Length: 360
Image (cartoon, rainbow, N blue to C red):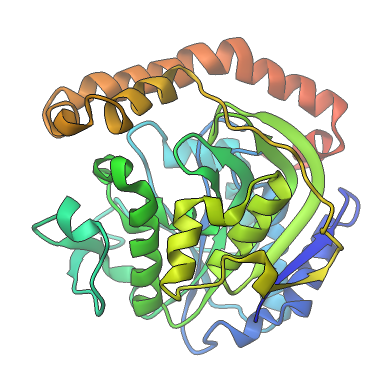
């Protein structure tokens, strides 16, 4: 039976609680101590919008927790997307001072001097990626033989309903053409989990639910204080429990259900032991909803134009959609809604005030 560890926390105790979480979860049993462990943080948006991105206390608490359990050979790997700037994101979200404080080298999967993209030959048949990328599924060579610790947050997602540990591999393992996979996103996440199990000697996930994202994520959400932190070696199980806490039936989410059926993890909450808090009656009653960008995506990827989506996303026309998404998020939603929400949150929320205390 898989285990998911769920603790309550507070801004005053969060670093100690993260260390306790990793100790109780016995993280050292799931990561090979003889090899490097890299952190895969989650920068869904380069702007400092709590709930969208790995929190600085999640990053710092995980580093401290790993060190305390004897895991000290640690790096971090960043990725970029067509609408997210990794350098801007790690700076504005206050990761850089932590990397410097704890001497964590940062590598970038889009820098050739850091890693190269090589064709991966899967041991088992994939569900979708071999058809999306018929010339071969490429992954970073740096990932082979290293442990990975994912650092997702609890939030909704416009295309997968919820997003967590499994979705966090999306940016690191696929290059900037990952938008090719959106019409088969659930199967893609299952394929990526299979690949991870083939290339990583150890995997673990530490999820932050101190501030959760309700609404059309992974960016344009409402940040909601919930004070939870979670951990597990089972990427499927931690996503299942997080989804259940947010108010969704995990087995109704195809990426969780398919991974469960293929034996890549446990997605049925009845078969998962939750250690720590009693969450049986927890239901955040989150709803995904839509925004302008997701409405366009739904129409093209899943609607009547799905059959000719390659015309839009595999030709120069894709640049129009990239610009549209970038403009909508960075020049409309952020200045007129997101920035104001965040400023209000920092004044009224305990976690917003803690964020302000971190060096930027």
